[in-house]
Length: 564
Image 1: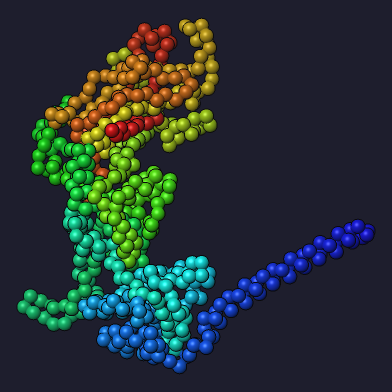
Image 2 (image 1 turned 135 degrees about the horizontal axis):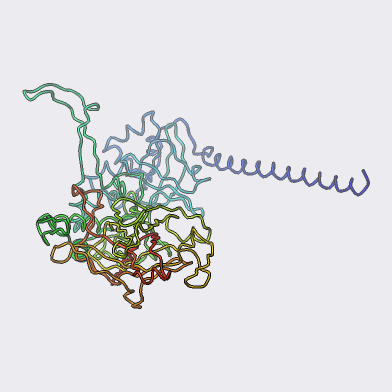
């Protein structure tokens, strides 16, 4: 080994050894630091393993009022037992205002938890959610050297006894009901409380119940019932202490205003009174249609009121409800609301619900042409195509479309396809059809002797559209063929090489909702009364001249909501 290589080897080897030495020192320092923190908590002069929690409390004059309350409620015996607890004890100054004698036990349970919790638990994670004896959750945290429990500051910490840990705090920790309890108890929330509690169910649990005798009616049980609520299971378990949510709660003013505003979107026709091969007739209004309208209106009002986490501040960009709808720049939803803390989150009580309909319930509808449910076609052979052309894969919805090839060249029997459009509201839409060029599959050039030029096979076609829906009079109708763009007045002609998006109708208003996708209401046999048809619209002259083909390539239909 030459001298230069030897020097490099020695230098590299030295660096490795030095790096390893630093790593060992760092690990040792971290371990020592953690051990010092642990020792500080458990090896102080106050640390006595021969006294119980109750004896430790009695030994502190500043906790005499708390000790008195423990004796009144019988929890002096609990804290003198062999069970392990952690106590956050308010000082006499903290209790100077007194405690309601009717809530003494609730107060005590809100300051005691099972198991040991010391500030050592906050070394790695600066916040711990602790379940108290009353079932509520309180947060034990450390931030910038300040240790808090709930909304109280620690005065003395980590006094270790033989059956637990004692902390003293500067004021009593507030007792908060959880969000579900607040919904049922806060004045002025009658409508939403009545609706949400209507899903409450109590099912008899025979396996957990105890047989205690008999009666003329049969066996008598010490009964156990299991609680469930279908709405809470879907949107947020507000009754559970370990689930943290923020919820917007409408008062009666907000509820009534929202109901009046939202119900117009869900105006529904009544029972069918006549049906022929060409049309169907419905009652424009009936008791059942009013009931359906009410069910969907209320469900829509409440579906986006819950958000995960405790939102003291709001993200500047977007916020997702538990219904998975996204609200952009969401602070406006909470503007002017009264913030109410709960044991498992926050409530914002408001006098007006401000959800943007376009982000909540008046949503974009996309119907894929390749989906066969509710689809009909005629005068053609239908093929489902999977896009393989890299230039079009990202442009074609779900990468699939349908192609209809004419079964005859008779202009009276041109290819057509219609699809059902589900879940339209009694609202305004811009309606589009997206079509795919032949070039997506056929990129070859051929010489057209009629046109005396090269062209792409099957370059383009001309189409028309028709809408079917229930009119304001309750009669299901199909409008006249739509042959030109409502804005440009240009015919609908597909491009030879590019995707074509046609505006079929602008600001079209459906008189009735065709909405049938509620998780809590089933109408029996569902009937979609909204359809859209696309049809080749090529006369014999243009077809014979080779100007257009009659092939249709349909990607999807889109209904964009218009909200004014």
